[in-house]
Length: 179
Length: 194
Image 1: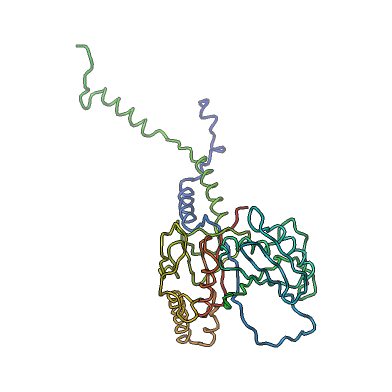
Image 2: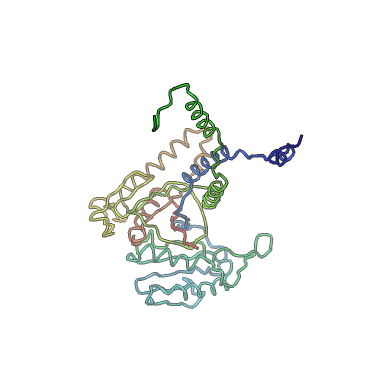
């Protein structure tokens, strides 16, 4: 006896398998609930600034003075200098949009190329400077952008490694002095 | 007799209707789950992408607007000091309320809160930070290896300050924390959108 056309099409060998999607969906919904709970939609990061300390340790390397790069942050503009006069003093007056961060960044890159081992910069802001402005200035002296020339620093094993920051160690120099 | 009549139970018309209802019930109802799964998958991928490995305790309040920074991702845990537009909190505990309206963002410290000697330390902040350090020292002293436990004190303070705060207040806060034994300040900032 001949089979009906519908029966002929559905032979046992080609039976369709259905994936049990409902339990998978349950797992997905649970996962989404968990991720929504723990996900922070506000991306935050940290900028480390150690407290300034007065060192009593005598300086062994008396012949070579440290750079001690210092940045005065005033309402009128910025002044970049080395306490031991290792670099010429530079001033960056305020422009229309605020502090001239582009020129400051260029100057910082040039100094970093000259002193690749140096990592510390001392900030000396005046009391009226806003925290937001300080963070922008810190970015200009810390963060190495994609357009900057590549900088390398010699590792302990003598191999040159790409530098991640310009002057990554920012210290507020007048926290204790009150100047 | 014309018109409709209600079939009596057990009649052939009633049996016919029941059979139809049963057929309708037994017919498989095909929900389009595959497309729903696609949506769920996209949501999961998006959430996994924005999921941080280490969560940071950020207080979501309209009285705190963090500055934006281009710094790379760094996470940290420790004692959190928040300088909002209206109040100062340490680890979620309210420490100080500024004078004036929060919207004005004057951050004026109330009279009598400043250290009379030197005038730079903020007493309520110092008290709570010193207490937190003492608590750590007490726990370390009670541990099996007190010397090792004491060394675990990193002196890190996570500072979450509103972007309108002036450096004067920030310096007073850092000075106070320094006096209380905190040597490393970690400024919490919002990551600049790429």
